[in-house]
Image (tube, rainbow, N blue to C red; front, side, top):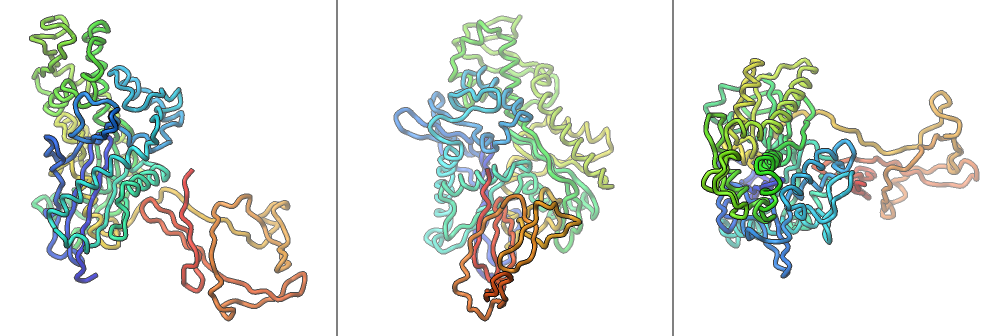
Amino acid sequence: MANRPRIIVGLDYGTTYTGVAYIDVIGNNHGRSHNDIQLIQNWGGHGTDEKVPSQIAYGKDGVVTWGNLIPQRATGRKFWTKLQLDERNKSSERSEEFRRLISFLQRMGIADGLGDDDGGEDGPPEYPGKEPVDIVADYLTFIRERLMEALSSRFGVALNTIPMELVVTVPAVWSDKAKDLTFKAVTKAGFKTDQMKISMVAEPEAAALWTMRSMAESALVSAIKVNDNFVICDAGGGTVDLISYRIRAIKPDLEVEECAVGTGDKCGATFVDQEFISWLKEKLGDQYFNKIPADQREIGSKLMKEFNTAKMAFRNENDDYYVSLPRAVGIDDDLGRGIQDGEIIITSSDMREIFDPSINRALELIDGQIAEVMNRNNVVKNVILVGGFGRSDYMYQRVQEYCQERGLGALRPMFPWSAVVRGAVIYGMNPDNKGMVKKRMCRMHYGTPISELFDPTKHEPDQGFIDDDTGLKFARDEQAICVLHADLTDIPESKFTKATRGTGGGVFFVASFKIEITIRGNLLDFALLFDGERKGSVEAKYT
């Protein structure tokens, strides 16, 4: 690999926005730094931002549009599909979040964006005609096409000969099945080829990689020291994810280790939008609110775009913000409702009321993460805020206040909105993907069943059985967890151990093998090794 060129691509498919970044390297990345990472910013339409809306619309005429190219009043618009990939959201303990979400969409008159079925009491609705994984795959197909256009423009025909690695980011708290569905969507979108391999990294870990690398390679290096502990808060559109690290080394290479298991919740910027709609409905009253056509209060409408501008400008100062009401409301001036010249006035007090439920939940998550670090006899020095919601100055002010009250530092790195996708590229720059994070906290255990010699001191009597081949008594497991088929026909008999059958006296051969378990991102692979060679493997399926 010494002089082999590679292209590393980061893909951050988010609840509300998606980002893509890349870098080309030779060998072990000599001469390349975080400053060389390129973002895709030409998204078509009027979009030249770091990200593109995570939306796709299936028109009645069969035309499919996506991102910035979706007409404002398009039908069949699908959004927030990412939240559907984690089916744990249908469990009773998580369904409250989704009842709030669906209630929000119904108040906006756009519940069809998440399907026609109301989903009942146990979770979000299903999409009619298409599974969520297929909708995500359709959207990511457009992302892949735009990526390849950019890479072709940059590298020309040489692109066909350069190996690529795609690093996909996923929420820290997602189940293995949700990660597997994400992988399937990425694969269906055409990313997985002989030329491109795929790996995954947790979103807050990617954010930490970008933040620490950019700090270590700048004047901010003096702000980080060996043995410092810090919490990364990745506040995005749908979720707020957290993870904590301890700095092991800064030079010659930056090294960190996890000091708490990542946590998170669904309390991102979309829930601020939810509170705005609730506030607006209360302000106008049902009579006037219901006059607003559904397509004029949905995601991407003029109303929501103007609110989003006000949302990002809010700094907790005594400023008022003005959002144009659709003409259908029929009110030009009503000071009692805060309407003047067809615009509704949002005061600073109103903004705090709209923001605080989401921010308060995020602060609870930060508090819990700090407590986890302290439970392991460590002390947090800094809380680092990234993500689309993390761009909010008010959000950052609240985090600063929280930290100051506890003697902690609060930092927000360059490019907080694209920190995750930039960090995904940094993750991929290390060929063995071990790079900066040298130690991780154990999140779960995997194993395969075996039959061992019966021991009356540890096994129940009904577990015992006599093996027909050896005549020995073994203890059986209650169920088979992993079924793996292997072909040993090409192995010469000299490699096997000859033995005598216990009950019949016949001769048979014993094949001694090992089961190797490999975890690669979201993939869990079980392989049978005979004499050091893989003779069969099976990939875990999540149900």
